[in-house]
Image (cartoon, rainbow, N blue to C red; front, side, top):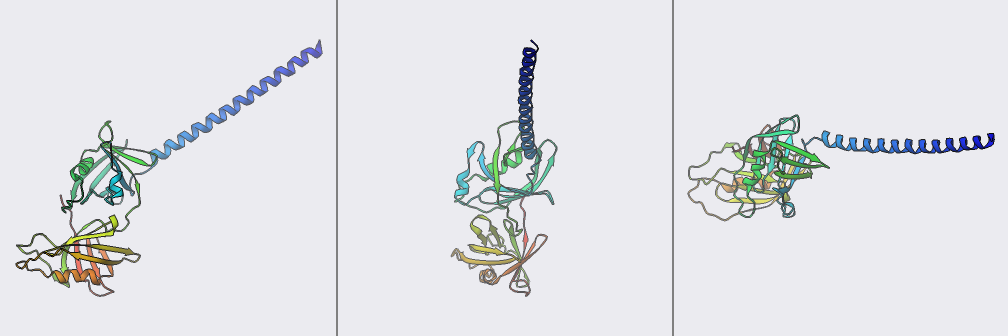
Length: 283
């Protein structure tokens, strides 16, 4: 009888031990899963949207990936150093300021853009700019950013892109001096002389006083720059007092540049600047 009781007790003890082991393993697995989920949520919440290039993927729910395929990448970047926003809306560069608050609140202020005409852009830029005018909060998940208004469907969604780290790119550079001489716009001149470097396909666009200009550029370390394939339209402006050839010569000779605040100098070697430009921002 004693042997039977001891046997039953041993079996019961064994069963209890197995169940305890199962519960312990189950609890460990649950704990690990909860930790993974918490880490994932923490990563998404702590991920900063600043100092990152955000490329548009959807606009009001519509797929915008074809813009990237066509080389017209619509994007924006938030610079944490001075709370400035810079971006490209399909034809023009835009800029402004922003503020971030708790609860993923965001607001964009003092937005302005360049005013180039791009009939081939096939994009309503006002729709792009309205994203930033209306957005008051953002959400971020799995590395994707959505700009929203209240709790409605996202105004637009973005993905991470490669940063443009050079301050010469994406700005409207207005000519100030050419070969040391101050430049003023003639009364009958169509618009001011300027150029812009676009990150898309490393294109140069601008206006030389009578004709528009187009070409390509390359940037290298040490503020090295090269322009190539520079072309102009062939419009004649006999009444406009401007020496376009002198301006175009700058792009043939320039091999480096310097930028101080919003003033750009295009140089050759260590000589005096070939031309000096200032960045212009439009309201």
